[in-house]
Image (cartoon, rainbow, N blue to C red; front, side):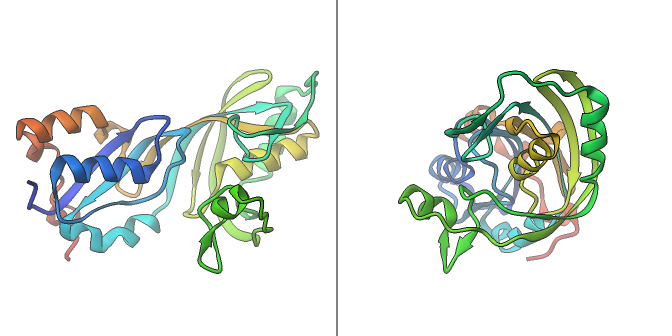
Length: 236
């Protein structure tokens, strides 16, 4: 049983929710309290701070931090969820967009922008997450919100795929950004893959695979991965 308080920086695997990561670690560690410092969609991988015991009291600190991602968007296809796992609602067979136009459009999204969260998101309306309402067939139009994009860079092109790197404020939905870029280009777009490489003080170089953490907990060697709150200047 883990009785100490601190933070594990996990490299979340694809295909499971952040809440499922928390459930697994709580089961393995038998810690009294386990939480996370920022939701990642099942499609996304990368940096997920896992807060153990008293560290859960500072969860909001990490939720408010700026974040950085690397990802890819697929041009020519728009989906209901904003990513490749959703139902296709628009499809463009021939994507005729040159790299210069893509870079020009993406530059227009740098700075303070208004963004509408996807209908399949954790944003709550009268206490209920939008994704739960959407699954019941109740589609509520989310309110626009202001977010800040510090940088948005194209890494490579292989049309219809565009690889990018982004640094942004809390509350930014990369899926929504892909939708907006696709509409500005006139061909539609959706998020193909996403990897969080930084959140607050934690980077991907610190992150450990979930399976590695499981093995360390079972073998009793987990302390080498637990980040002490004092080292971060945090008090609980």
